Image 1 (cartoon, one colour):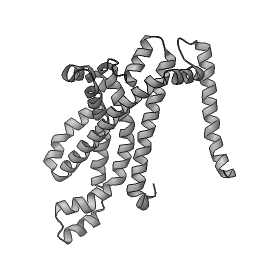
Image 2 (image 1 turned 30 degrees about the vertical axis):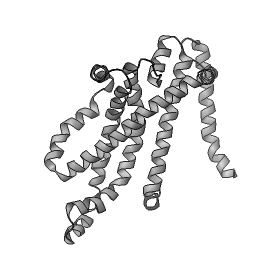
Image 3 (image 1 turned 135 degrees about the vertical axis):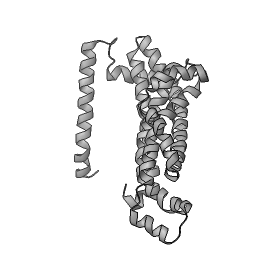
Image 4 (image 1 turned 90 degrees about the horizontal axis):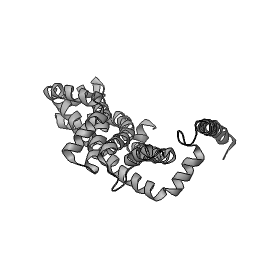
Length: 253
């Protein structure tokens, strides 16, 4: 590594080390039953690695599935809202409600409707990730300059050609921005659904968090949180990779 790269990495590295040191100090003063330290969390990651890996994989299925459903529904409804002003007005109250509704409040109802299992986590992940995708796609579809829109109209382009050749390509930067937010929210939504919709067979990250908290195992609770953070980071990296592949040549992302 060059000297410039080392200097650039020094600041974040020192910040992480300072944070770990502060965490260890606070955990030592609070006691192991209230707050696990970094060493205890690392030991839990090693000793419970099999269960944590299986739980992370199960939660990943719900989070990725929810993100895919939210992306599909959000993009289709955004296109419909652009195509029809009446549909846009009809969707407005529902999208506002989905934005502000606390998912943890409706998760028990989803258990009643869908039963225990992956379906609840998939539904909550979809609900959590939907609005950022829909909002970003709606904004992106309105992004093309008026001059370009008038040029398409001048050449007699149909609304479908305008959508495919102008609106959708112009919406990609905003859409990927929404997807980056939605990726993390999908993980959060899946875990919230697992708080009430998972009985531990098979294990999930949401169930492990609840189980560890009830069993006075803060080390396992933090280990599950680490698994959730790694999962969200992986989804973010995948979205960024897709963004660079799709629009990096034009927007330098």
